[in-house]
Image (tube, rainbow, N blue to C red; front, side):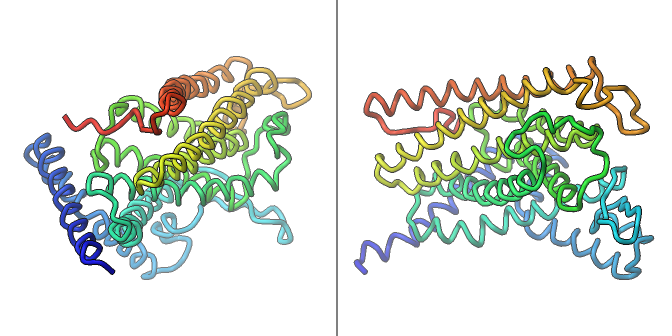
Length: 366
């Protein structure tokens, strides 16, 4: 190995530390004051230790009395099991204790995110010689890539085992309400809820550097959480599963394309990956997601599909007027997707005109 190569890694480490310290000092501490500053800075600097301590306390509190009657069991295990006959599969209903399970997974995902970034992706970024200013972004996008790869695989598996595969949309509504769900579906839904709520925390506490589209991204996360919570409460989990898959699948390619960009590979590779990402975006977030919107409007209240009555106590939340509440959230999300697609087209124009693909939402540090 040459002398230049030997010098590369320590320089990268030093530069990365300086970049992170600069962000902590100027982008967070300067904008917070008093007790708020101390709390935010403590959370920022203890994203592994803090959730791990709380998780350990919950587990130890459960082990004192490891029974379903122990309230701490609600944080660790799914609540509301239903088994009509001993030979039947155990299914799950929904209730307030699900919030405890979501809170636990917010803590777990906070720990997993920072651990993955610091102990898996950071060493790789240093080894690859990624520039200091790009190192944090590389780790953030690398984590999103890993998470979305897993969530898309699980979501697609659930769809594959269901009658609404492959976007056989009428089965979103047939035999509604789908109140009882399998343990896999409930785990998938609540963990996804935890992930997106944790993403809101990351965004609002500015654990990640804000981009120019901070407001749009915050709106996206809030709308997503409202749709997840609303669809879960109202027994629209089939539709929710389909929405998750369309969104997460595209994020795999977006995050992967960005990671390749931060690795400073030849522009032809990053531009080709951008084209792949663009195709998947149009197909999943506009065509497939459009099918979900159309189905909600046209198929949800057909007499042959379900009763379409208002009876929340028995799980019926779907009527000819309430479906427009669902449509409102879905369309809002689509409007944000269209806004971001316009940004994608700007990048595409750069590629066509001979410039390499750049993220037009680049860091806004001023």
